[in-house]
Length: 285
Image (cartoon, rainbow, N blue to C red):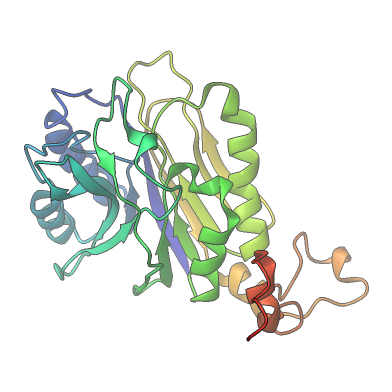
């Protein structure tokens, strides 16, 4: 069964005008639904806010729009912790078509707070989350991650091992010299986790280079550097077949990605605690 994903790469409003993104996002949701999308993916921090103290919360308005138009809407916002200390979690949120409480992922990597301070877009004291929730939908299991977490393969692997088949990984701004490696890593996360990985970013002008992409384990289904909305038809059947399959001699004649890499054929959970080197325990007295 196929599904249709709308990837939105907007011309975003910078702070202090970022609340204007909310109305634009609602318009994109309506357009995506009209074009038959079941999912709409917005960039990191879109529609915002981008700074603390947070002056608005878009969650209720986007959740209402998702329910009104019968789509899942993946978007970015902040979860304030302390207005006095300017601390907040950075969230990727997924609103549901049936109006239930939205799903939330608190960015887990890197350690905070340096990543969102000292720039001209974001300004808050980022606090890292610690959980990797996976969410059931009528179309498959969804995982949420964010931006440069693409450089931390543990994040999407944690989601895949929890069953995520469709991983939304919206990003922030123009990647500049990181563009080529970023694109490569998005596809790599799809290959190694046998998942569909979806990303897009904010643009502040039409001459910036975007990175909107939907990658599967065996091919990139869609990519664009331009602003705008695109609706792409994809399916999870191949992802599921590759996950259920077993890698054999000669598999490369029919498979463009390794089968079963999340299965016991490849996985050795008993080694997981040894991956990260830790000091040996001192001998007991």
